[in-house]
Length: 261
Image 1 (cartoon, rainbow, N blue to C red):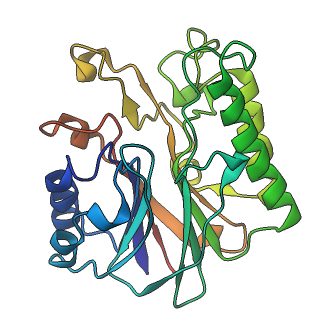
Image 2: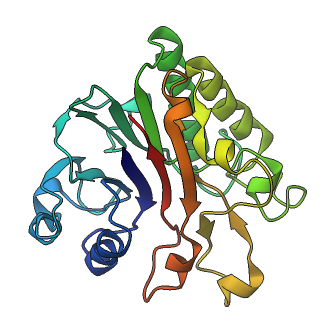
């Protein structure tokens, strides 16, 4: 049995203390971080190793993007893919000794305008997710878990107002269609929603809100998916909303699930 957490940390060096606090208080066996904004060699690994996280598989770049998987369990590097040929550090895979592969994914945010002609970043996002679909269709995932900041809230109850966000990047119909097509291609199971099928769920609240907690205008952008052969082993999903209230927080909070594998 192991617990996995995913968290867009929005700078691992700036928020090293928050990562350490999470590792101490929640003690997930595996923590997948996104938007590390650091070359791998500058990630504060010694601080995490001191807490028992002796294995890391990561891809980084200076100031942007970056994904890192920290583990108390032995893991090996299982490669990466440059989705949409962006040259970004947005994916890394790690393999556990039991053969389960964990994909740590950071999908592009896509800018502010949901139009690929007016906003190339939106086109890059759609291309990224389209390639995810094609990869999963060509090579159906088995014994796999994919987590990360997908930057898309697919369900109506994954946002504070479905009607008001239909034209807002992260919840537009075209983005949702692309993500659901990628999910279907791999027959991925959304573990969070398997465990918590009803009700509003958010993992991100904007920095722009004066009082994020009172306004509560959130979106569920962070996900834990599992391939169908192991999905039934996933349970005990949680989203750690209080972490958004920690000092100098990320705008995302950790999402966790436990697997009996």
